[in-house]
Image (tube, rainbow, N blue to C red; front, side, top):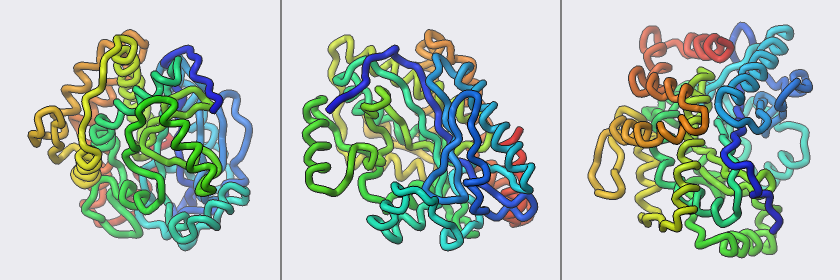
Length: 366
């Protein structure tokens, strides 16, 4: 399999899946085709449903540079939407939208996806943040992706931003995770022994006809050979752009730490897949409010304590990369709660989900 793991290392790219809403009612609107305009830097792209758009930055050396692009992209789509009586929102789910009302985007890939996955694809009305970090070597990319699996639960706890689904309070802080879990080839990925092992497994699945290529693996973290990156996909969509950039800075620092771990010839610790998956479930249910399993010790500890330990350990890497300033947003999440917790505060005042969406839209464009 050809790949582009050639560096430069640690450049980052950020993708955000955003909601297209009516400017007054905040219902989702099937209007992607009217918002697809070229961007000075980065891209505005369709997604599976016509009520969803994706913005994506070009590779950037640090979160300051990536942030300039991302802010410009958000401004562009918010302004374009407003001119048409629409609005843009960002969170892991829309609080009261129904998937039955959404049209599938007129693209062969998405029509084929619905043909293959049927109901499972049609109900996937969720929104995430994907962060790409460049790595200079295929074997290193496998090592980094394997090592990132232990961090998925903390990233999810920090990013949890989807407490509502189909006009109901779910009791979860990230309902997006169990919704997406019905897809095949999602969640915590398998451990790959090396690049050759990854090639063999992908090749087997392609030859068997179950998928066209590796991009049909929708795992929480995956090597992306075409782009030469490790892509982290576990995070809910973030309402406030500074939280997106804070998560990107943390992920970039994680990749640097794991890449240096590989360069030093060190082996990763091994943990049962079941415990990695269980930790992710705990993060989806309770977010930063709950406990996670500290895998080296198997003790249950507060999720905030694990996140704090991780941020403190990685801050030096973020400083080396020029992204440490963005970690202030992680401090904000730890001090004031995740996006899900903030949505619930708004909802509890009047039990009005339109009010929740109004707050989401306002903060998305801020």
